[in-house]
Length: 329
Image 1 (tube, one colour):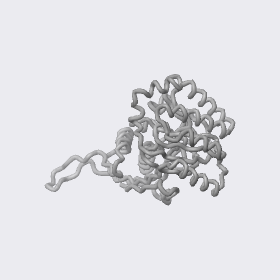
Image 2 (spheres, one colour):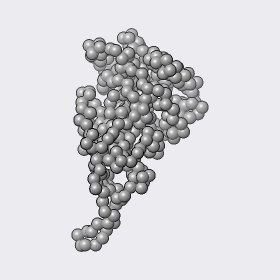
Image 3 (spheres, one colour):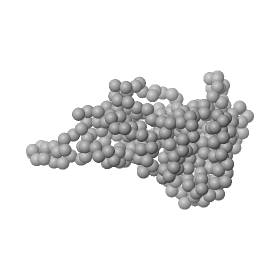
Image 4 (cartoon, rainbow, N blue to C red):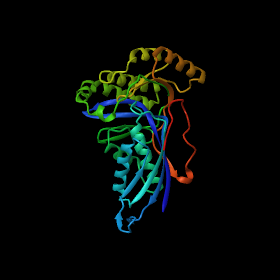
């Protein structure tokens, strides 16, 4: 018996707000139009097989064929198989990603979510957003990209999940100052709890402003909230040209900045109606002035996974940017 399925999950441009609330670490995710897609081919095995001598030998319960380096995804698939009590099977997972690793784009969470959701589609197993989140959180602190819209999450243990409504449209000029940051290592830092305590009042104000912005559909307030949180993050994960880029963004009609709190990205927040010419000019100017490793325009996007059976497998996500797509087989 063979099952075929696909799923797609967005990545992020860091977080709108991240810190602690009443001592509980949390973040508000910022999904963008950059994705991981996964295709799952599932072949069920017999519980026993015969070796060359004719003797019976036990088969491993689940065999996962994955792109190299996807150990967290393998762990997620193993957990899913145990939770669902799946029979012995071989699962071949094809993946395509537009997310860079170690930059703060939620690449690991998106990988895990897309791969497991593709398997769930192939096996016709209902697999809801909260279940996806719990699975990812069992492996590492995660972003709430599997939930529709904009979501606030206690990203360490999933103590609470709060839907904040549909995304507010915005253009984000995303720059990478270089380097890599491991999510597990960042969240294990001994100075992180103290950092959260120090800035909890400011983060509380930023979150209140973000709530207002979402309720009023006011991108200006949302950008202010993002800027407050990003500036607090400079104390523990500084971006090399933060103040200069913020001033430049505001001077070019932008509304503020957003950062990858446990990554290397910093992005200027601009209104959604910028023309292609203006965007090209701003990107070119940012490359000259700040000399980032990467400069790329992205757009805010509602979170949530999509998926279906194999006959619904769509054309590849394609090359939305010159440096973002990698194909993994």
